[in-house]
Every structure is written in structure tokens, then in C-alpha cells.
Image 1 (tube, rainbow, N blue to C red):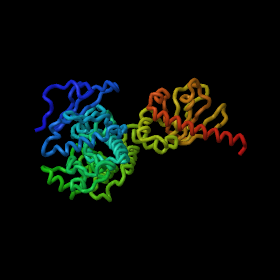
Image 2 (cartoon, rainbow, N blue to C red; image 1 turned 60 degrees about the vertical axis):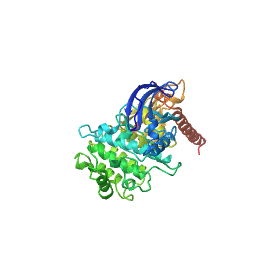
Image 3 (spheres, one colour; image 1 turned 180 degrees about the vertical axis):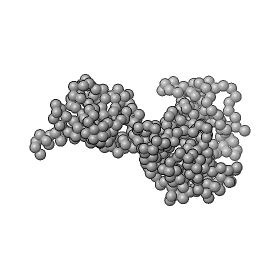
Image 4 (cartoon, helix red, strand yellow; image 1 turned 120 degrees about the vertical axis):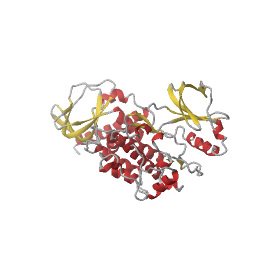
Amino acid sequence: MVNGAQTPRERIGKYPVKRRIGEGATSEVYLCDDPFNRREVAVKLVFSEAFNDPARGKMIRKLFVTEASLAGKLQHPHICEIYDAVSEEDLHYIVMEYVDGGTLEQFCRADNLLPIDRVVEIAFKCSRALEFAQRMGVTHRDIKPANILHAGETDVKITDFGAALLAAGDTTQVSAIGSPAYMSPEQVKEQALTHQTDIYSMGVVMFHLLTGRLPFQATNNFSLIYQITNADAPLPSTYRSEIPKAIDDIVRRATARNLAERYAQWGEFSSDLADVSRSDEPVTRSQAFTDSDKFETLRTLPFFENFSDAELWEVARISSWRAAEAGEHIMREGETGTYFCVLAEGQVQITKRGKLLTILRPGEPFGEMAYLSKTARTRVADVTVTSDAKIITVPTERLVQATEGCQHKFDRAFMDILVERLSMANLRMSGV
């Protein structure tokens, strides 16, 4: 039998141990200090004897190598980052981002269910993260609540990519791995897999989070596999009556046995989730602007067209959003300001001393001199809403604390806008 060390550990490699935070059949997880990067990390230490197990040693080594190979590669705000991996004679460990909040398993009980809108937001973020992984050539193959870490409210991070199928890696993949209750029909049949297997598993995770139970109940794996391959999953509303039809439809399509009936792409899945999140049904919407609404809106605006997914999530995090009615003054000439805005919806006009300068439409920024100028903070014109609008506000102090990549994309977008406006001004002056 595989066992961990019996004496307390003080250090794993170069990482001082703070405490043990988990243990499984083949590994332990420790909370450690990373003194070089000044952060806490989670270190998964695989027992050396696990690699020598005559029955499962080869598979365990394969899972370790697969996960270790992803170190530094899957950098996404909703994927638990792998920082480092070490495999020496008697020491095998993986260093990961530490997330304090447990897994989503805690919300899969009937007495501790999340509000429906939070489940939708979590599923949306997972779908975007898994689409990113797919673009990187990675299919997870073991999506389940235990492999999704809860970082607070609707923030999550997908972890444990040991079972992943790597498009650019070794084509010989370990089969018969994963958690049967969340496996797709093609996975339990050990058929060739694509990202659609993860879509199915994510649908089962949604069902579990929404209802507190799995779609198929069985006393053994044989019965469970038979149901997965031959029966249609019930609708979540069967067990939670307030779940709206739109969510039933999403879960049903995600868990369709027939691949042709299942979501073909993650984008379709996340788009439907965003549409539900934007709906006016009170049961599915408790915020004026949900994270999925922000992300999907940002993706459509020309100003943000060159931002990566990770950078869009960063913009959603550092900005504030609000609705504004026609006639409202957003900025006034002569006032000081430490923020700029981007128009997400509607229309605003820019005037100076009563003279119309221009009309802005969705995707255009205003008040940007508060960020671009190192000294000038005084507004040089009035900004008035001319049709009901949605305004994205970015405080300059929050942007200057953002990642360099995000700041660079803002700088580039502002440069493009300024060049365009200067060209238009020159045309007007020349009378063309």
C-alpha cells in the first residue's frame, strides 16, 4: 500500500513547508512558501513508492509527467497555474498556485447549494478557461467539482491536468482514467476523445451544482456506465423547480449522448450561458452586470479587439460598470478626474462651451487624458448621454497597477484612437 512520510516535513526541495493541506492515495499536498517569488504555493508531492507500484506505477508516472509538462503553459485567470515541477530519484513534486477556498464539492450538497445565477457564472468561467486550454491543445478529461477550486463568489480555477490529452505530445494516452459519474459516453466506451468530452463533463458539473445530485444514480460502475451510454439525463428543474427552461436547455445540450446534438464548440456553450446571465429573470440574475456580461460585452467592442481573454478578465476586474440615462452629464469641462471611460452601449456627445465636437458610439473611450497625461487631470470638454447607455469606468490608479500586458494593450488602443481622431480632424480642417 502506498503511504506518505510519517514524520513532519519542514521543506520540499527549495520550498519551506507551512502545513499539509491534503492527502490522497498517491500524493500529499502542502502549503509552502516560495521565498524567491514571495508568495504561497501548493506543492503536490507524489509518493516515491507510487511510481514503483506494480499495478499502477506506470499510469501514475504518466499522469505526473503530463501535468509537469504543462508548467508555465496554461496561464489563464481561471486555470490553476503550474509554476514548477521536479522529478529526482526520491523526490517528485509539482508546484502550483495556491487557492484558499476549497473545491466546488462543498456546493454539491442539497443543503448547501449556490444561487442559480452563481452556478451560471461559474460554468461560464470554466467554459472560457477550457476553451483556452483547447486552443493550447489540451483536453482535460477529468472535469469534476473536486478539480475546480473555489476562489470566492463566482471566481474559480480549474486544476489537476494530470489526465489531460495533449494534442502536441505523446499520442499514447493512458485510458480508463477520470471519474465515471462525470465521464461522457464516448469516454466510458474508451473511444477517441475531443474537447466535447469536457463539454459533457461540464454539463454534469452544472447539474450537480444546480441540484445537489448527479444525473445518474447507480450502486456500481457497471450500472452507471449503462445509464450514461443508454439513457438521457433528467432536466435539472426536475429536482429544483425554480430552474428556468433556458438553463435546462443548456444542461441538456451539454450532456447530450449524441455528439451531433451536443455543443460542438465551447463558444456556443459560453454564449448561451452569457445570454441566460443577461436575462431579466430575477431567479438567474442578482447583479446589474455579471462577470459573464462584462466579458462578452468587452469581446464585442472595437477598443478591446486585440486584448487576450486573460486581459479582458483583468479589465472586467479593475473596471466599474453602470447604466446612464439620456441627459445625464458624465463629465464636465473644468472638473478634475482620475478615471476614463469606454462607452459599452448607447451614445454620448462631446461638447465644448456648448459647441458639439463629436458623437461617440459603443467601443469608443472618453476622458482618457486622465490616464495618458502625467500632469493634466482637468476635463477639457463636457460629456453628455444622448441615449440610454452603459458606461465602463476605469480608475487610472487601478490601471497602473494592472499587468504590463494589459497596460500595453490599453496604450496601443489609445494610440490607434488618437491617430484616427487626428486624421478625422485634419480632414475636417482641409474641407475634404
